[in-house]
Image 1 (cartoon, rainbow, N blue to C red):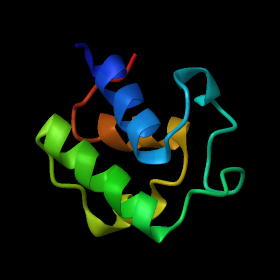
Image 2 (cartoon, one colour):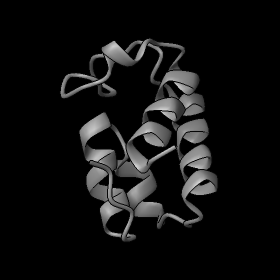
Image 3 (cartoon, rainbow, N blue to C red):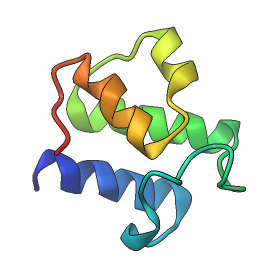
Length: 80
């Protein structure tokens, strides 16, 4: 599984959505299920899958599908 597949799988499992739902509009403002519990699950799964420890600021800012890719890039995790 490549990084994009892993990334998408985490999102689909945490938010219980189809991969087709993921994209630019998938963010904490548009997704009712996106609460603090899902945010924690999302971050924990990302850290485990990509073997990184996100900084607190990055955890707080991880509020969209697209922004998550940018945040992980800071840790040299490329999601294409």
